[in-house]
Amino acid sequence: MNYRKDIYEKVKFMLKDNSEVNINCSKIARQYGCDRRTVSNAVNAVKNNLSPPKVNRPRKTDGFELIIEEKVKTGAPAIAIYNYLKNHHRYTGSYTTIKDYIHNLNLEKQKQAVIRFETNPGIQAQVDWKESLKFKTKDGDMIKFNVFLLILGFSRTKFLCVTETRDLQTVEECLVKAFKYIGGVPHEILFDNMRSIIDKARTQYNDPVFNDAFSMFSADCGFVPKACVAYRPETKGKVEVTAKLMNRLKVYSGDIIDFDDIKRITAELNEQINSEKCQATGKPPLELLDIEKPYLIKTDLDILTGYFKETVTRKVSIESLISYEGRKYSVPPKYIGKYVDIEDEGTGFNISYKGHFIRHWDKTSKITNFNRQDYMEIAKCSSLRRLSNDEIAAIAERNLEIYDKL
Image 1: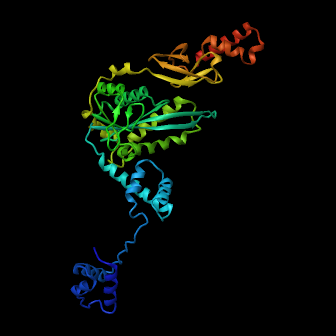
Image 2 (image 1 turned 60 degrees about the horizontal axis):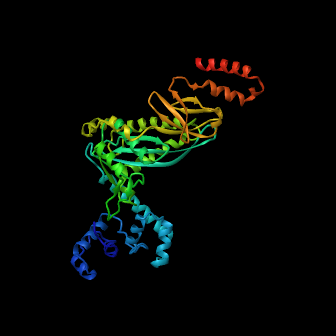
Image 3 (image 1 turned 45 degrees about the vertical axis):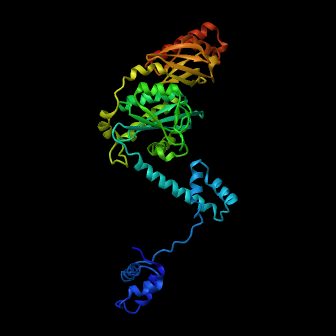
């Protein structure tokens, strides 16, 4: 209801002794230079005991709105914008006023993003990274990793993948894993301006330039790559929401054993969040994925294996062991404390150090796997070194027989 505070106060005074007094709205309107309906609204407000209208006082940010919003797009923090306005535009308000204005501005943009990116089944997915997470192991070591995030626009089905790098090959590998998980390929995928796949970022005035290698990969997969406008994170709102879910991983820092432990926990979280009811849709993502799957592109993903090989890095423990897929495998003790590369070949994997081949291991079901020569070298470096070679060999053979039975 539209009424003015000054008119409200006058009407309230006129009716304070007798609420049945007949108010001449036209006369008061002429006195205050307003429409008679404004006076009529004030009369109704007083008679119905409505509160007086708030006075719209000038705000310290009045006149600075466009400048603030442009600076926010550059990614500048509130304190920098405050100092800029004070030094160059004679702003007289406080830093808190600027900070609150930016906070409310971001909230409004987030609300807009939820509406903006409602999509039909199979049309769009969004991709981003949760970068440079650091977890402590039970032994006190620090493991640094990233989490690749993909979310389908319609069903909100999420795919999370732990990685050690964020290069082009890793992006392509994660995408193929995501396509296998969701059962097809979205028609378009919206990316943040990732340097590994984009040569020139998209801006308000320029289209993005994806590098040739990724353009060829996306064409083979069948999707159209798109990029959000730089400095506008609200254009990828669904992924930003998913990034918040990654905070649920942090509780495990200090309880993990190795990198494979992080992968296992993340996979479990992936299934959990896809089985939980989504606030936006009111249904679990996996339930809506059944509706979305028929609209996804059916691509033979096996033909894409030539784009990459599975290569990961592991630190050799003090026991001269590396952990891979929940099992431990030995390497020569000279590599203790060093990081070796693992190239997966399906039923087995190769281990190398700085390009030099060390050994091939076939994958096994045993928890710990020792090469006999490795074990002999480890024993010679241990407290057994004072024994003769024959004695060390006998002890090594006995211990290895025990490991073989585990």
